[in-house]
Length: 337
Image 1 (cartoon, rainbow, N blue to C red):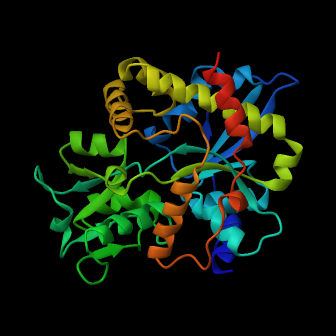
Image 2 (cartoon, rainbow, N blue to C red):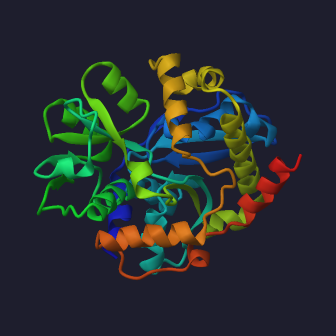
Image 3 (cartoon, rainbow, N blue to C red):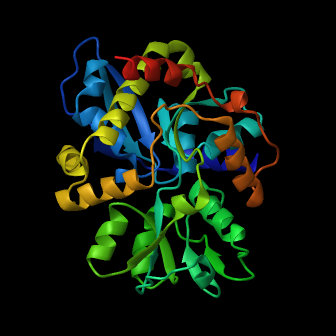
């Protein structure tokens, strides 16, 4: 109930920033999908490529993109009806499910399959080991969010405990962590690309580890919609996932320096070189699902991570939270052509 209350309060308080994902004039038969993303990152490059390469247009879909600045805000927007699809960690939907909602948000697709953040130090550490974090303070995200919980899961696997061996600072909002770190808060900070790449390129810090490589596969960022919306928009949901699946195929089969120019419109002020390097780094850690389904093994690992953080009141089955049918169908269509 506490999590649901947080989502409702966030729905009232949050102010969403509109980002242009499509500037084409709508035809009468074009459907606008209001999509709220947890943050803006090259980690989600296939989503932006689906627009840039015209895949959404092929499905007669126009995306109205807003930035929630955190999974709780994204889920609040979906629950309130301000957004049709939320793009965030599935833990947000899991909290609503176990809280007993009568209109449970459903995961219809999973884009990323591991943590996309990199651990940034103030000093070069070419021989970094996780045990080197003893006695340090780390900005790792919002308490109860997948980034922070995954980071804590990695620490625990290395016998490191928050409040005992080190300090995890949960006091800084997710979208303010980098500025807080630059201002002097904490010894380390987790960052997504291209922020981590540019921060390092500017000589402000040093990437010392990939959290996703250390944690293993986990359903990290998913597309989520209320059951009531899905019942009325099945063909739209299917077309949306078809476009993203095509974009994943493209990014996995295309050189990074060819991909990067298609992303420049979505990352104002970021160089093509930085975008190319970020795409390459995410591809190197095998960041994206080719079939946008959630597997039972990864879902169980997610629940292990949430239980480890003390944030889960009961476990759920995969079918309670997900509907893989759309993703399975479009995957077969895209990869059998």
